[in-house]
Amino acid sequence: MPAHLIMKQSWRHLIMCARLLLLATLCTIQVLLLPAFSVEHPLAPPDTSSPQATIRSFIENVNESHHIVMTANEGYLKEPGLFPSASVKDQVAPGIILFERAMDCLDTSEVPPRLEQDAAIEGTILLKEILDRIDIPPYDQIPDADAVEMNKDLSRWTIPNTEINLVKIIEGPRAGEFLFSSETGARLEEFYNKVKTLPYKPNSTEGFYRFYISNPGQILSSKWIQRLPDSFKRIYWDQALWQWISLGLALSIAFWIPYTVLKWNQQRAVAIEPPQRTWETVIPPVVTILSLITVDYILDELINITGQILFLSLVVLESLLWTVVALTIFLIGNSVAEMIIAFPRINSQSLDASMIRTVSRLLSLAIGMTTLVLGIERVGISLIPILAGLGIGGLALALAARPTLENIIAGLILLVDRPVRVGERCRFGQREGTIQEIGLRSTRIRAVDGDLISMPNSKFSELELTNRSRRNCMLLRQTLGLRYETTPQQLNVVLANLREMILTHPQLLEMKGSEKEARVRFVNYGDYSLDIEIFVYVDTVTQPEFLDVQEGILLQVNDIVQAAGTDFAFPSQTTYLAQDLGLNQNLMEQS
Image (cartoon, rainbow, N blue to C red; front, top):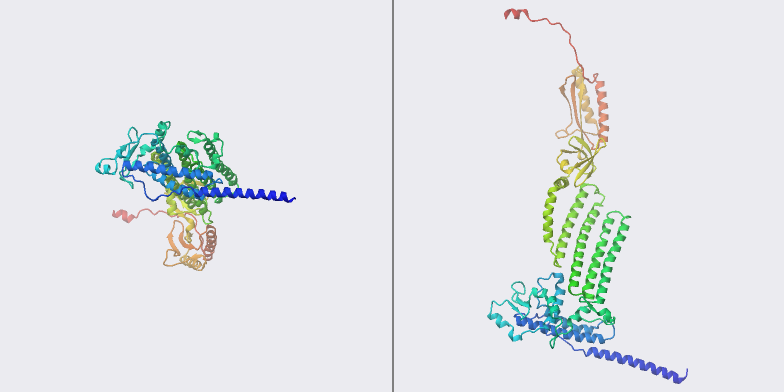
C-alpha cells in the first residue's frame, strides 16, 4: 500500500479515537457537574406540631424532592447506557428522603398495610398537585404552634373553601401531631379530578403526577420507555398504553406457568405412589405462590401501575396469594401425615393412620385458615364476619350430623384407649372376629364365619371387647364325666395320672400361688356322671397351637381313663322294679 494511503488511514483512526475520548470526557464531566444534594438531618421527621408546620413541611419537602429528582433525571438521560450510574443514584437519594418526609404528613393509619406504601406515595403527589392549583392562605394565617398551645381544643383545621382537613392525632405513636386526615387521603383522587384543569401556580411541581404515573420504577425515567413511539406513551385511565400491555403480559405469564405445572403434575401423579405423590401435589401451589409474588413486584415496582387499577390488582393478587398459601400449608400437613404413615410399623388402614391423617389435616387447616385471615386483612378484607356466619351454619350442620360426630368422637376414644388394633382377634358382644380396618366413622371386622361386619364406632366402643390377641397364655378347661360304676380306687388313679400329666407337659403352666395355678379336681356328682375338672393354662397365644396342645392332652386323658379300668359316662336312666308293701298296720292301729 502506498505510503500516503497508510498515513491517511492512520490519521482517520487517530481522529476517531480522539472523538471517542472527547465524548467520554464530556459525559464524565457532565456527571461530575451534577449538583450534589444532601439532607442535613436525614433521620429527622417532618415538623407536624401545628397545621402551619405540617403544610409548610409538606410543600417544602415535595418541592425540594421534585427539584432533586428532576435534576438527577436530566443527568441520567444525558448519560450513555441504558441504566443510571451510581453517581445518578447518589443524586436521587436525598430526594427520596425528602419525599418520604412529605409522605409522613399524611395519616395512612386507616389504609390496609399492603396498600399503605403505595397509597402514601400516590396520595403525596396527588395532594401536591391539588395544592399547586388552589389558593392556600399565607402561612401567617394558618394556626402555628403558639396558636395550638393557646387553644387546647384545636383538633382540626380545614383549608378554606375545600374539604382538605388537617386533624390532631389523639392516640398512638404519633399522638399530638397534625396530619392530613385519612378521610382527606381517601378522597384525594376525587379532589384532583375536580382541579386538574386549573392552571399551576408559580414555583409548583408541574407535571410531577404525569411523570410518576407514566414511568416505571417510580423515581427515574427510563430510556427504554423514552425510545417507544408516542402512541405507546399515551395515557388511558391513568396508565400509559405500554403499562396496559405490560400488565396483560405479566398476568398472562403469571397464570400460565402454574397452569402448565399443574397439568404436568396431574400426568405424573398416575405413575407414583404415596408419600411421594402427596409431596408432589405441593409443587403447583408453591409455583403459583412464586408467580403471584413475582407479578406483584413487577406491577408495583417495575411497571409502576398506579391508582385504582393498582389497588384492585393488589387486592386480587394478595387474596389469591394468601389463599394458595393456606392451601399449601394444608397440603404440606397432609404430606407430612402420609410420610409418617409410610413407616413400616404403621398400618395404612389402622386407626393410628386415620388419626394421624385427621390430626395433621385439622392442625394444618387451622394454621392455613389463620394465615389466610391474617394475610387477607393486609389488603383490607376482613374474614371475621364470614367466619362468624360459617360458625352459625357450622353449628346447624353439627346438629344435623350428630351421628357422624358421635362416631368420630368414638374413634378418638378408640385411639386413646386402644382396646384393639388392626389384625387383632377380639370378641365383641356375642360375636368374634379379626379387626380389618378402624376408621373415623366405622370399624370393619372379619367374623369367624367369614362375614365382614361394618359397625359404627359409637356402637363398637360401647360393647364389651375381649382382645384375644393380647393374651399371654390360653386357658384349657375341660370337665370329664366318669361313670357312676367307677370305684374310689379307680377315681384316685385317674386324678393322680392327670395331675402327673399336667406337671410333666412342657407347654402347660403350673404356677402355684398365682392367678395361673393349674388344678385337677373331682368337683361334682352329676346327674349321670362323676365330674372331674381340668383347669390349666397353655403357654401359647395362637389359636392353632392351642388346639394342637389341647388335642394331645385330650388323647392322653382318654388313655388314662381307659388304663384305670373305667370309662366316660353318657346320659342314661336307671329303672328300679320293686313291690309296694303298703302302709304299716301297727302304725295304722295306733292312729
